[in-house]
Amino acid sequence: MIQIRQLHKSYGSKSVLTDVNVDLHPGTVYGLLGNNGTGKSTLLNILLDLIPANQGMVEIFGMRYPNDTLNIRAILGVLPEKELIHAELTAYEQLQLSAMLYGIPPTEQEARITSLFEYFFDSITDLHKVCGSFSTGMRKKVGIIGALLHKPRILVLDEPFSGLDPGSSIILIDFLKNYLSGDRIGIISSHNLSYIEQLATHIGVLHNRRLLFNGTKDSFLTEGAGMLDRRLSALLQQEPKSSAGIGWLLSSENSKSTLE
Image (cartoon, rainbow, N blue to C red; front, side, top):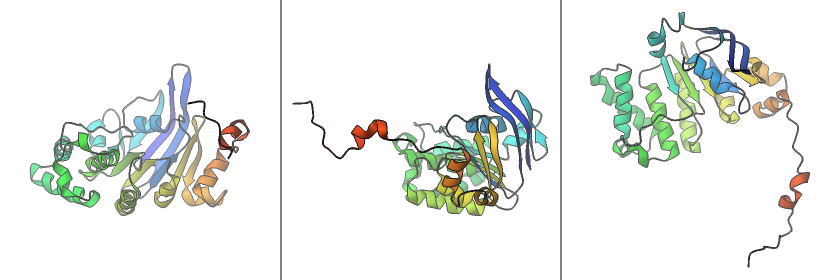
């Protein structure tokens, strides 16, 4: 399991995370929610040992940083929000680089890369095109494949649906439902609540530096409105915005142009 205990993070006098405690068991898909700037990416970066916490403990299947760093990273598959794709490399070269870094035997690399590319892409010919020519969604799919090549036991996805078209998103959802079962753990941070609602078994809501909610998706939904977006809005106590100040924009009357 993953255990996070009494995690604190601050930058100077600014506190970002305070007293965060999470337990994630195999078979869990954890949907990490919250407004922009609430510390979601910071929490993921600490979990991945990309930045240090000021206080607290992270234990992953009985292992801890820094003594077990390499062993932990060997079971992690990561899709960062900001993609790490080299524009001058072909998709195959990019994925082959990922496979080499994870120590996948050369005899297995091509089969794994090709099979995953055929699953997520419409055309296998794109495999040998440079990534710089790809759309945002295509680069995102290359990143997803790179995170999966070594069959990670823990999959951490930061905004995985951003840039994907609806068809590709459905393919990814169906895949994750199948993959994140048994002894695997998924952690997904996303603003797309409809997709999170389809995938998550548990929900964490960060707000004002703390975990405002941490529990099962079913308990999250039964405590408020029956839909994830309505429940989240109620939990964060977000009041509807008044449009009085922008009435000029919403008015159906045509405004006279000042341009001749």
